[in-house]
Amino acid sequence: MAARRNPDRFGLSPAYKQGGLDGLCGLYAAINAIHLLTAPVRPLSAACTAALFECGAAWLNERGLLLAAVTDGVDEDAQYAMTRLLAEETEQMISASLSITRPVEPDESFQRRKLLSVIDAGLAQRAVLIVSLGGTYSHYTVLSGRSETRYYAYDSDGIKWINRQNLGVLAARSRKRHQIGKSGLVRMSLTES
Image 1 (cartoon, rainbow, N blue to C red):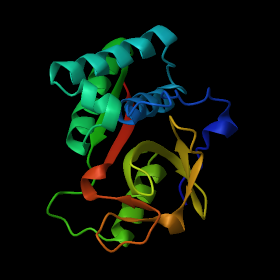
Image 2 (cartoon, one colour):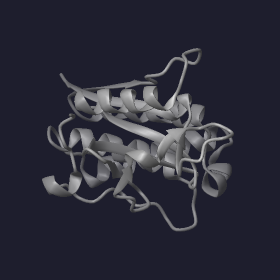
Image 3 (cartoon, helix red, strand yellow):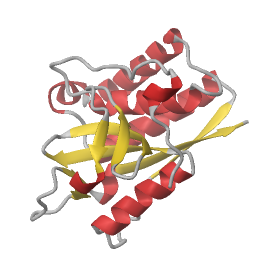
């Protein structure tokens, strides 16, 4: 089983929260994933975190995506590109290297077993996963650890955990409460420099 990284157990500050009316969960998920990974090694200051937020907002604005992001959120490709940019900005702020990947190839078969395996493997390797939840919610969150029955979330909207049994693959006939597509998984890990 993966090492349990329940943020509440380690005295980390709470995840940064998004506003009640905006759709910026993709930006917050990227910042929260970076915050969670760097905290044990080199915590980001409030000024650095604010600079990351500004960088992400500027990136969205430059691409004409800011208004849509505020009202409706961003698609998975834009969220991935923004996460990569924020990781590069973080690397310039601190002496650490962040690895950002999509762990499932576009042409790869993707079923629930594969989804859970990818998440479990990432968490076992002390990575975090940004996931795009479909189904009940349309929301990006960060999976930070697990127990036998739950994944722990480090989330901008206050979600603390997701039951494993409620997680499935985004598909037309899925009845799972939380559904993830293959491009909706982003793995982030830290390598000290």
